[in-house]
Amino acid sequence: MDEYLPSSPNSFALKPPVTKDISREAPPKDWPHAPVHRLSEHGIYFVTAGTLHKQHLFDTPAKRDLLERMLLSLAKKSVWQLEAWAVLVNHYHIVARGAPDSVPMGEFLRELHSRSARELNRMDGVEDRTVWYNFRDTRLTYQYSYLARLNYVHRNAVKHGLVPVANQYPWCSAAWFERTASPAQVKTIYRFKIDQVKVEDDF
Ligand code: NI
Image (cartoon, rainbow, N blue to C red; front, top):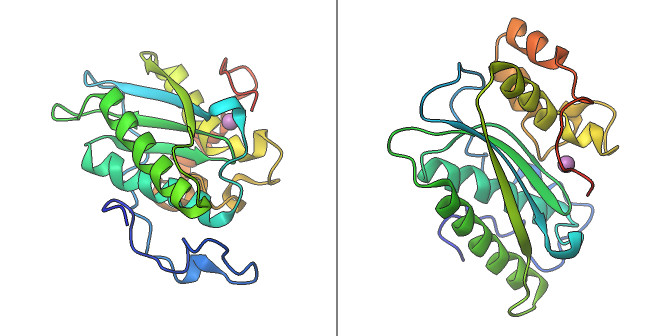
């Protein structure tokens, strides 16, 4: 078992019982600290990564749990503060804030990809399958594009037609954001138009 994968025997069985609510038994998510800040000199990045050929590899709740939990715990270990994230069947998006002692972004993502691929392949009982295609990271340098991308990521499951309201999607930051940020912050962020944000997101 991977050391950055919180132990959760029910979540990672090869064939989890479909009727079981694993979220009740899985360990708590490694929630980040705070949802919104000013731009800083250490950099805030918007990252999108997709699976090879956009294959639907994270096609069960247990697999999306695996990726989301690994993302949260490795981000913390790599000193990248996640401010928004969305984990979907064949890609993910994050907005991450750096600090002076952050591990380089590329290193953090490569570790996330190699560890999550190994665990996913173990769950699926396959060997040496390439899971990830690549990632694209953009440094956000304008307050407007930063805030608009926060909203874009919080509400990505809505954009992809998975849920009518973002906080209903379990593998994203929306519910956490609404719980952690002030009502004024939530209102401000959710007001940003996401249909004008230029993001490659045809997954
Ligand atoms: Ni997307």
